[in-house]
Length: 285
Image (cartoon, rainbow, N blue to C red; front, top):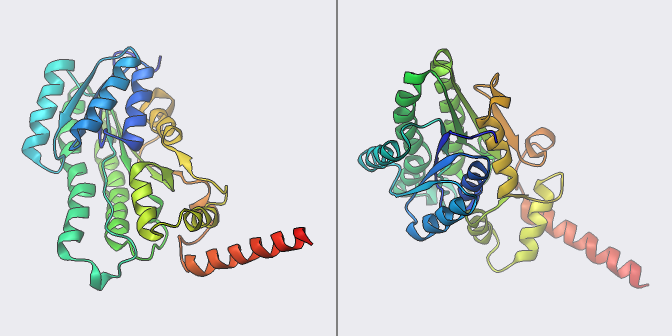
């Protein structure tokens, strides 16, 4: 197993990509510490880790709070002795479909605090641990929104652009210490967070949500959290030992083939719906 005797630390581990990655690491032999504010979700993740035959630890904390982070990393060190892998996964989105004039300063600060400040706090502590043994892997969760325009999500897109810059700068600083720093840039992933965001886009209209996803993603589907976890596991493994300062796009071709996200989505979805209705009528005749 690739991660036998390794210790992985994951933020946002109570659900979605964080939980799927915790399970994947545990299945491949790692001991896993998961941090989140959701105590109930962390308990479920911890149970899944144990079901893989591995050891785990849950830290209920706000990872943008430096004192809470240090306390829980100390707990992980007391239990496991070290940290080999850090997956900075936690993230929140501002309410989508709101223009800049409708985004409050509190909304903007909250998104940047959770998505960027937490990454700085976690990485600063992890780098100190990894430097001592001249070995480590840090993976950050960015987004396709760092690369493509997204209407009505200015705080989220800004934060994810910062994650990309943070990743490359930290990689440049850490490469001489044997620490690889990379990022993933997911597209639409079937997680609770994505379901909440899509409900904001089209409340009570799952068909339009499905059409929007089809329009945005050339592969005409969204990914599972487990698919993303597989990419994170690769970046954390020795198979990716010559990769650093790299952003891996896990987006079904969005950034490679398209040039925008959800621009004029209402008009496009309406057009596609009209085509489908016309095709159905032709078949009936």
